[in-house]
Image (cartoon, rainbow, N blue to C red):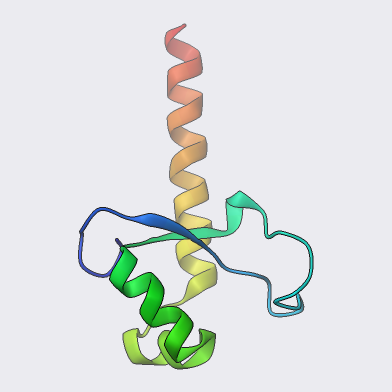
Length: 79
């Protein structure tokens, strides 16, 4: 979990322009949240949760995808 460090589950963050009832959000747009924080997100709502924890969703998503891409490139070069 990006907030407490506990074991996490993926939480999908839709783009601001996406409706919450639209198609499934890409797995590339997830942040790791523990079950407790994941449930809290759904109780608070996107904006209140973001403000409460001062999270920049887009920054977190970009950084996680950058790290994943770098790890994939390193692993590909090993084989």
